[in-house]
Amino acid sequence: MTVDPALLLDGPRGRRLCLEFVRGLDVDAREADQLGSAIFFAAFDLDPGRGTSRILATTDGDQYSPPPHSPEAIARLLAVVPLADPDEHAVLSTLVATVDSARYWQEPDGEDVLAAAPELRELLARISTLFANSPHSAWWATPLAPETQWEVGFEGIPAGQGITKTASETLVRWHAAQVDEEVAAQRERPADPRAAWSGNWWSKPPTGLTRTTRALNSRGPAGLWLVEDSMGWDHATVRQIHVPADGRVFEIDSPDALAHLCRLFPLDVTASRRHDWYRATARNGRWVIPDWAQVAQNFDAVHLTVAGYLSTAGLAVPVESDQMTVLAGWDPDQTFWLKDVAQDESAVQAWGYDQDEGWTLSAAR
Image 1: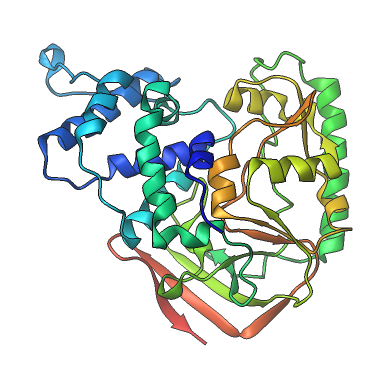
Image 2 (image 1 turned 120 degrees about the vertical axis):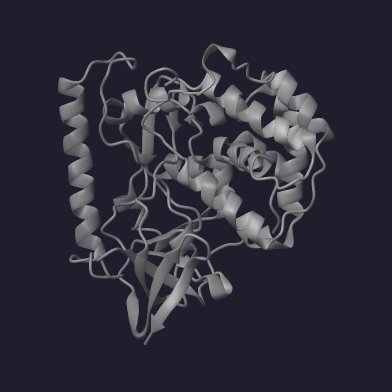
């Protein structure tokens, strides 16, 4: 399986990946410096929080004049900046930045708005093709890797210790909570999607389930690196999980796969998600998510590929003619186990984060 470069450009996170790569270019060229500045100022101008949550301060006062930074100007600069195949470090660091900048409870930030500009699509397509053809991203389109699944626990919460109930108990409680929240939201929240309301905005399975990711060779589990809205943790413990040999795994590898899962097992969450997802997608209508309690009757786990994440997360995905869904709050390559799985007590590791080195192995037992 290979990454589809066109599918990447259809997803908000996929487009952001391409823009993040441009921002991280280390090219000794005047055009590259101009491009970085142009992207900075364009993103500021396009950000919905300009002047409030995002403020520009300079020391030059009225004498400072920013460079041309319209999408057209950025497209002209990008057309002449040399692009090289990303190495392993560039692939991972760009993906990390893309994941960390995700937000589904408010409007897209200026960088996401800029990445969606029609003037940039053809040029960003050059970058999506570089990533799709890179040997360092080949695993992005692959299904669950059963031989190497690790659970990650950050900062004082060792892997596995946050799970106190069986998977079945967790799912039953989750379903009841979702139904109760939806009923309360229908009663208490306005139908106007523009109203200043917020609440439960994610669509992933319940947090109380076991979550695993594959190991990235010496870099450790992907779950150390690929964390949406991370809290800046610098210590983690990881524990290997024994995957059932006959486990039934549903793969979310595209928007179509998520839509199919929602059609099979829909749970209406219109009232409880309406306001957050309208801000995130500018779409209004009926919203559904997969009913994970029902999914568990047919599958043992659900795995989100990196390609599925980049093409799907944050997108208003059509399900039926009058229904949509959003993939929100789910880290790439993460598998949620809908059944209880066994931990390997002999394979526990401690990892630490260094600003220069990233995550490195501290100790193993």
